[in-house]
Amino acid sequence: MSQQLGGQPIIILKEGTTRNRGEEAQNSNFAAAKAVAAAVRSTLGPKGMDKMLIDGIGDITITNDGVTILKEMDIEHPAAKMIVEVAKTQDDEVGDGTTSSVVIAGELLKSAEGLVAQGVHPTVIAEGYQMAAEKALSILDGIAISVKPSDTAMLKMISITALSGKNAEVRKDLLSDIIVKAVSSVVDPDGKADLAHINVTKKVGGSVDDTTLIEGMVIDKERTHPAMPKSVTSAKILILNTALEFKKTEVNAKINISTPGQVAAFLDEEEHMVRAMVDKVVKSGANVLFCQKGIDDLAQHYLAKAGIFAVRRVKKSDSENLARATGATIVMSLDAITKNDLGSAGLVEEKKVSGDEMIYVSKCRNPKAVSIVVRGGTVHVVDELERAIHDALMVVSVVVEGKKVVAGGGAPEVELSLRLREHAVTVGGRAQLAIEAFAASVEIIPRTLAENSGADAIDILVALRSDHQAGKKTVGLDANTKKPADMLKAGIVEPLRVKTQAISSATEAAVMILRIDDIIAAQKSAGPAGGMPPGGMGGMGGMPPGMGGY
Image (cartoon, rainbow, N blue to C red; front, side, top):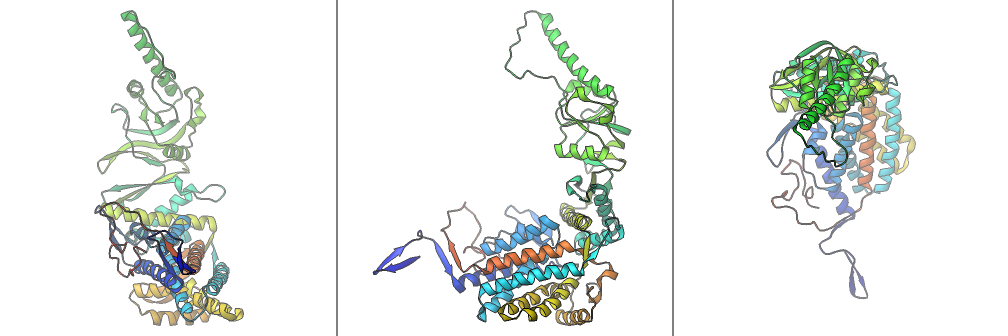
């Protein structure tokens, strides 16, 4: 970057710095954003296709989860990275709708590109988009349907909608039952459902049918001693956050032993101390012990003799969930144990699952933490199943907390488009053009659903618009019949927050990219040998030049 001053060029940027300005910068950003949206668009909806992603060391991921695809792709272009952030935010906040949010963001920028070409200033478009988004959130809230957290039939429909289009769909009835029961179990009195209290454990082997909900905890550990019982019924559970082992001095100490008898006395005293610790556990009445710290060999021996089932080095998070599931209190000192600190479970047992020993704490009464054991024939099936279950758990918990849903199948987007066009006329001026462009952009969702299900997108859109103009607000595309249908009657529903979050984050990203008219990039430092080739995304279809190095 240089400027003439009295015939002498003034250079203010470091050598090797590149700069794209004005239309060139905007076109680069628009192309990158559209390419990211195009990369995931074919995965949208119940008939969406999957992507196979292969990383640098040959590991394979097969998924149609938008955020997973975008995380695995090695995206380098800065504007494209901003679109990826939209998917990450959507996933963190509501767990589903990641593909929708990215596709909407890409379409908003595509529409903006057309307006810029007509001479509308990007700032005017940005302001129009923000007005449209604000109005859209108000419209969505107006068409939302209230749901009681106790309405398990509705929660199950929401779960099934989230599972549709993923590999989990084959057993969606079984899985949706598990998901709704799991979320309902961990709801706190304030109505919040913290998914940290649902422990999802993956085990390759068996089939999807073997996926189970454990009313308690599953811990990837084994008994500390083979002489301990393999299972305990009517378990009284003690959870300790202190070690059952001989305490070493905290300062450097030297012990002088002058006679052979002193050695024996020293060892006897050590044994006596460990035995006294175990006696305190036995006196508490516990027959199952979970210890967050170590249990030494001698303590294991005494515990086994007392018939106590013991597990050591249990993770802090697992201990906390165990306490919630069994009603136990985590005890910090052996001297502080009372009978009230003990938890209970109908059964504690060590089971072999796919060759690994695991501890099952089950049949808990009113557990506030539960476990889902995910099973499947291959590691890729189990991984994708876990992603689908995570999405469904998130959307059910969002509805339990937010208590509002909207119809699925593109119905809210068609209604939004119709109402925003009506609103645009009342605004007038150049902002009207931007609001109309926003209205057209959100229709990308029903259009894509139609394309991915093999229906004619134009015919479907015309039919949906006609129904919505007639006041049928919940009519969307039934992907199975490829015809418009009442989504509420069909049981295809989504949380309101999935839609509002998608609109908000897509608009924010589109507006931020719209406002950029200058890209100044420093020279790249030399990367490690064998880095990414130019192009950044390894030949991903539809990626324009500039998606890699910029």
